[in-house]
Length: 116
Length: 285
Image 1: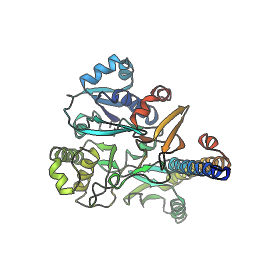
Image 2 (image 1 turned 135 degrees about the vertical axis):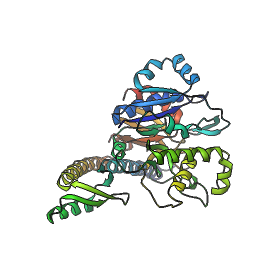
Image 3 (image 1 turned 90 degrees about the vertical axis):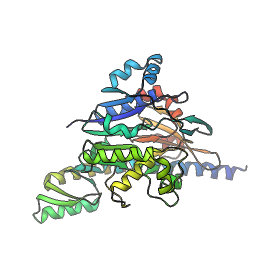
């Protein structure tokens, strides 16, 4: 096997591990962005955060029905409390994602990728 | 309202399910902060005493629930990386989980599902009597799961994974588990009806059919548990270092790619590789 082919295969191996590590980090982050509340389960994403903020701005705060991730209606007794919970969770988890992803990008070997 | 986890363990000559259950139960207890009960049989208890893990079992589990060891002719191919052999497989008692569980709300777990986060705690209050995981999610970036890991048969309904099942003690759950038992007892009949191969009994299929019938024969996604991050049995758990699990993932043409996870629940189908790392995994408890 010539040197360039050997390097290419080594790089392919690195890219495969990179892809798997990226997937497992996303899996971990997805899990942390899932929240159970008032009998429903919600995926915290930008649309939920924006929608909740908009409802509060419009004065809808008490006993607000939201559609959860399973498509079921869920009555949120106090939307301010819900907002605080999902905002805090979103920013802490996204910051963790950012840190993990930065480490992933800077890892130039399979060994380094496995240490994230 | 009591909550807890439930695990089944019936040893055989090839797989030490007692140790697997002790590990899985200890991790669930630590990371979910819940009591865990074990359903097992006399011969498995004897093995626990012989292998000197019984005192640890007594300390870990909230309740030891003894049942008769089921007779089984069920066999499966057990892969361990590239090696494989056919082993007996006792999996016919899970339909009894409803009657045997000491809790008002139960999380039923397979002993090869290792919990490293509190993710499943988010689902206790979700309003549904029975929640089953709706898919397996291959750890590999290219999905290697086959069609029959996603559907009951070539033309059949979606396959749910009975690896994690959460249920309340109520009438709907009782109906559900009675139905699972009916499917198990009349497996050939349901194999004709749902067009699957009945050679090996699979709880996943019985739970999927029960789910399908209980949903009024609808196939839309219903309230369920999250998909299971899964390593297949050709993958190898290579090492455990602090909180990090390193795997060799079976890639194309008999080669392996390395991968590692932290703080993530995982379904490890290669049970022998869990057992080879048993001591290091128990250090995480």
